[in-house]
Length: 361
Image (cartoon, rainbow, N blue to C red; front, side):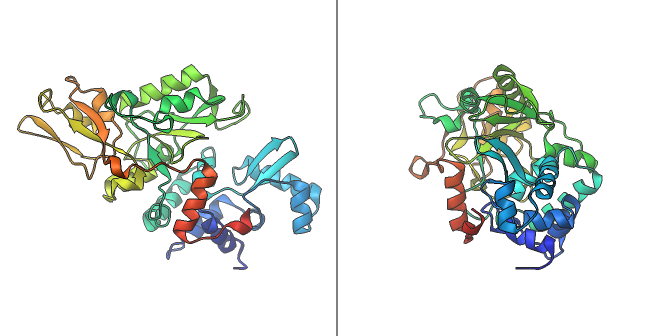
């Protein structure tokens, strides 16, 4: 294991199933140096993914408990580690870089950090995170766009994720903020990241990055996002969702990759594809303007779908004046049930990437 705290932390973060790609340019280390002090990086590199109390960590690492607890609280406030209060006391845990540490830098992000993220993004190009199954993102189709004859599961319905949660919040999109700081402001609404608490009520009342909202307000944000042309995405699992991103190809790290680098649609899991009823289509090209993936083209007054570019979001159908666009099953024989929980996803991802994070648990 490296002795340099940043190299050691980078190695630990890459052992987590989500991954943290190392770059030849050293962009990944420059990024960590902006986020963590050397002392914070050292401590984070010795933490576990499961929650531990300050007392447990102090015993394991042979540190003074009082000083350690103060350090842990400051790190949690900076979004470097997870911290929560349970029935067994205050607990602290290591987080993946994404989704995790990066998103928690929303309040700290400045132009310098935005540039460091962009450099890392361009150097890494999602290697590791997107190359291995299962994908981290699942596209959640606009519910009313799905063909009425199809069976649609609860994890494929954004409204269902909101209805079954215990608390709701909304955040400014960190991807949109990052691109804005680079002089590339987004044309879409920016405060559209819906965060969910599957089990705990009032979970966001003291979260300084999140505005707590009601269930009805969360549903309104969702519907306004799809009307604006944003794509619903969430974790690629069946239950326990804690966010719904409303994404665009100009800012979202994952959808940018799909659109700009022409990576296959499978990198964001989706079982659907847009289908045109030629008898209804008037060739108005409204759908061309809505599609962020250049998957729709009007030829001879009829819209045609490029299935290799379509990610099955259903955004095109929302404003089709003739109701000529619906979502149909891409390939029923290949429809795969996603991992049941986040832990199941992590186990599958670890196997696919060939990493063993057991010593982090």
